[in-house]
Amino acid sequence: MAASDAQKAARAERGLIAGATPDVAEALTQWLGRLGHERRLSPKTREAYARDVSTFLGLLARHLGRPPDLKALADMHPRDVRAVIAARRTEGIEPRTQMRFLAAARSFGRHMEREGLGKVGALTAVRAPRIPRTLPRPLSPADARAMADPATRAGEEREPWVLMRDAAVIALLYGSGLRISEALGLMRRDMPEPGRGDQIIVHGKGGKTRMVPLLRPVIDMVDAYARACPYELEPEKALFRGAKGGPLSPRIVQLAVERMRGSLGLPDSATPHALRHSFATHLLGRGGDLRSIQELLGHASLSTTQIYAAVDSTALMAAWKAAHPRAR
Image 1 (cartoon, rainbow, N blue to C red):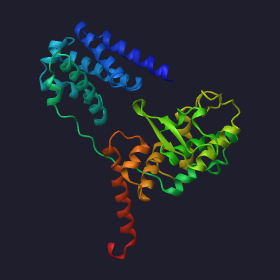
Image 2 (tube, rainbow, N blue to C red; image 1 turned 90 degrees about the vertical axis):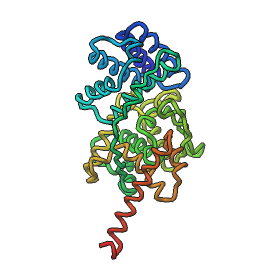
Image 3 (tube, rainbow, N blue to C red; image 1 turned 180 degrees about the vertical axis):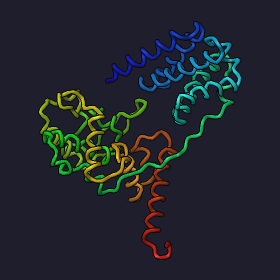
Image 4 (cartoon, rainbow, N blue to C red; image 1 turned 60 degrees about the vertical axis):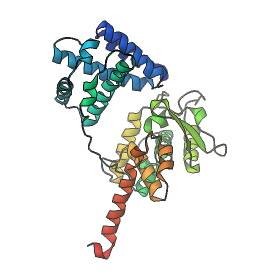
């Protein structure tokens, strides 16, 4: 998987450099190398940066009437940057994507300044688009447990090991707060057998690793799936397999959750990622502190984790209004 990501990043970088002027191409090569070697960004993140800057340079070239060289980038005015952002907005791009797009361009601008290639002040003079902050919508503890119960799908015409597999993945999302990519990225050797460990090392965003505790029921569910799986689970290969033996696709887990959502009468917001939200919200509701939850989720900033405090407060107020006689 890592080699594939690296190949995609390399292709994106080649495409970006091919459309640039020679001086900008050289600066881009140095910048992308720094992202990989000094900042240790993952291939996927580097690919996203390369794609965003390529789009920025393309829209700027359309605005200026020619591909920009380093001097043109240094001579940019805020109005030029706003024109690029406006062109991006007409494509129906959401504010969050707009912000990432501008952040990538600013990163390249900082590289130019650091290397003495020019100061791109126009990029910092333009305010990034505001992102409306939406609260995550966690499931109730009972609904989250029902999703991880193989009996919930007992009536489906599926192989028993498939139902056990999906339940094990969902148990990891809710029981350990994993992202779906993190759960499906586990190898067989990563998961301890019952009685031989109660934690795993997870490879998260940006190539960062963290240690995550495992509940005994989660270990047992994964072990039950591993025993029932008809394919040999080699230590260095994917733990969760698809119907034909290859690595399990995230889409298969999403479809399984959609089916259970219908049978349990849950809203569309009940997604695999909502199980991760539920993990954090339920921990906070039981007295967990934000700093510990931040570490468990692998958030780089505590401000990202603090959104769960707002969720917990919202649920508390809703319960108070429903139960307290003076609230009516």
